[in-house]
Image (cartoon, rainbow, N blue to C red; front, side):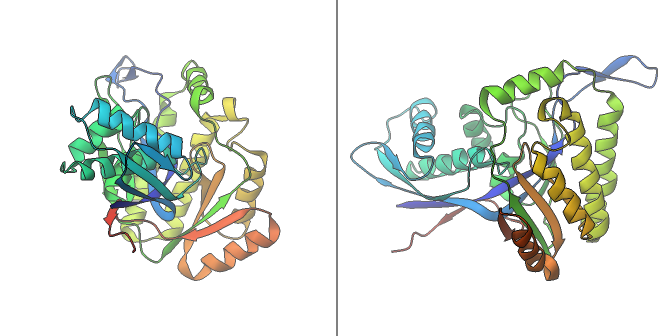
Length: 329
């Protein structure tokens, strides 16, 4: 029997929406090759997921998102290994909600891939994981969840060149152990599937000034990264909030404002009024995040629960990737 535990991904935002092929140089001529998407994110311990895989008479799966997990396993067995694998049963013991801004699709796909490769005795390397991710349709825009599955931490990716299947990772660092992340999960579903593809098509047709990407890059390179290295939570939080809010404003034409759900703006304003600096929306939502010092985390979570009828989780960052673990007897 094989058991895989994976974590969850917060996506703080993209650097670009992928429309431009070139950026203007110092002479104003669009001559600098542009990269598409890119962005910043963080892996967190909860909600996460856990799957088991064991030999069976036929391929099957049970538990939350069972059909999706089975589809991933069969696609890998048929399209990647070039040989027949003995059938397996996949058991999803726990799985974060999908379409909630937690990167569940990518974490599930790679957890299944790791289990399938382990059952076949195939070494699990980064290059092989990227191959599996591409085969399973992950990383078409952001690759933060792929790298986060492999190594965890605070992550920055550069964005995709035209000939790149998966965006390269340019920065990864451990998140401070005494910082906590409060997750607020609103009762809604984030944009996904064909609706998400249509939204990006609409956004890419709009004129987005290069200065918007310049500002986001500054907030990441000169704001979040040095503040993280200095363990300066207020500075990190302010740069994170500003970055996330500006990304949301780029998405406003399709999500109705800087946040995807009307209640989200109210929650963000409330948290900011309580002196929490690093607040925002993960991906399309509905999950919101607040980065706060350990000593205040549980108190803040309880205050949110009293004020709002929502699910609230206090979690650590995940500074390691997914694990193969020994199943409990």
